[in-house]
Image: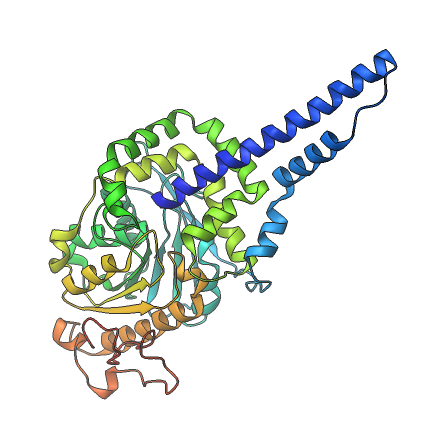
Length: 420
């Protein structure tokens, strides 16, 4: 999430400046008070003390009022219990993998966005765990996965995903779900392992992701793309200055500055306070050096030319207010994939799977049920069967569905790139 990284750094510098001004004001008051006390002079005005105390309080406690201002009071349900295992990654990382949910039917494998971790999928755990098997894993160097020994690349992430898939039961269909860089990882995996599509991997879901260098599909791309050398230099500086940046990021989180950056870059509507805090906390916890290396990897990646060869049922989500990945990126993916359905989610930002979780998970659930029915047939899934309109393959339409956002598998919504 390069745009978020830029805003996070910008607001963190501002937050640190406020902290420094608060410290300077408090020192000025203390110095004046000490001189007056020593020389028996009149005590100085307390204006500097109160201003310094107010700014210092905001620097260290601003998170709470910012959350009250920017977030809604709703809470996410209690976390489900999951079985955690460690899977050896292809590039030397020890991958933290969590498994939960139903013991039968399709297994949904979730790959999170960059800078985040498997903790981001709280809503999916609550909404889908009763019906499907769920697998959540942390990308290398993030969350509870260790760092790789041979560097960061989308190809390496794809092979790590392959290792996670190999650790799962072979008698259950797998649906890969990827958000942001998770979607990039899924696309890379599919392009590198077409022999597993429609066999080991039954379908894919791509959420708010791109098919090429993110600088080309973000807001103000005409400004940022020519500045790619500057962006790369900034990432390399982040690697060198990582310990100092980590402390600065925590101070920005305490002040609420990171939450402002997350709200501006990540959300199209007003999220809940818990959602906003979760989205701000995860990249704060993760190493700035790791995040910088992943950002550098994204800047030299593209799967555009290989999309037509990813011949597997696909659901592609785009958010109408996504600034990090503009909707034309998802539209291009859906148009290029042989078996894709595009779903446009109005008012959703880049964190659409979180802020619009009920809708995303409803569509994913319907899609997974469709794949379950498709796989239960004696004939292996194919493009023809996926595009079939046979009544026994198509989940019933809901009368209250809205044409713009709705249109589960099998329905001909106006937003569909290829009606199923």
